[in-house]
Amino acid sequence: MFSKRSPWQVLLLLALLLAGPRAAAIVHAQQPQPPKAAQDEFVPINELPPDEKLPAARMLIAAYAVAWIVVAGYLFSIWRRLDRVEHEIADASRRIQQRGPR
Amino acid sequence: MARLFPALLVLVAALFAYAPVMIANAPFESTMGLVQKIFYFHVPSWFVMFSGAFICAWGSVLYLFKGSKDADRYAVTGAELAVVFGLIGLITGPLWARKAWGVWWEWDVKLTLALIVWLTFVAYLLLRRYGGPGADKLAAGVGIFGAANIPFVYYSVNWWRTMHPKTTVVPSLGPGMRGAFWYCVLAFMLLMVLIVMARVRLQRQRAQLDELYLSLED
Image (cartoon, rainbow over all chains, first blue to last red; front, side):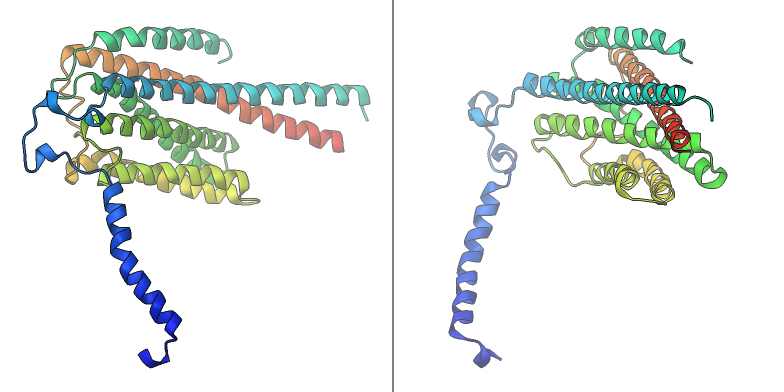
């Protein structure tokens, strides 16, 4: 089975084998890691690195802003659709009246 | 119904205008602090999402078994509500979770099921829009299936071990939190009634327009 493989295939396989663990390490590094303090040491809260201090107010404001924007956008879309249909109804009714009874 | 709409609109606007005061005056939760106040919009948005899903299922059943066109209009409205308010829940939840749990998202049963139900109603709307002839009946089946999943979403926190707070949280709220919470639920539910009225009216207007175009063609 191995003898049928071309040198290019073997090289590609080797490259994949070498690159695989490196790619896995990169992916692992990109995953959010659990806080260190919870596993092997206790860190006082005032010594937390700045990137781990999440301001609650920013999250709260973002959540309420999203809720308002989504609701406002949806209400606006209903209002626009209603407005368009009512215009079309008025237009169609006018055309029927202009045409007169058949 | 037409007379009720402006009065309801004013009431809902007043309720939402005063909601920030109610939320600001509610006490801080002991472990999560300020970020827990997302709860006052997050949970009511899921109330509306679930109600929308049940409206869709009820309308779909009536449409499938009795052929009621008006019930179908309610079904479409319910599905839209489920998608819009589910989207609010799916965005506000991770914003809360990032601070409270340390992660944006966790593939636990509650969150995963909620996402699946939301996607089911997205599928319903896509079917209605692009499914072609006969898609309304197929979509009605999807709507019933989507609503059938709601009890699993709601009770999943009690049946399986998840990070999400349990259903016992709401009945055990303290007086300060309870008032603000039910106030927001009332505001959201009345907003839902308002949207249902407007959206069903839009569907009826479209049906009327179709009839007018047909009579123009004759």
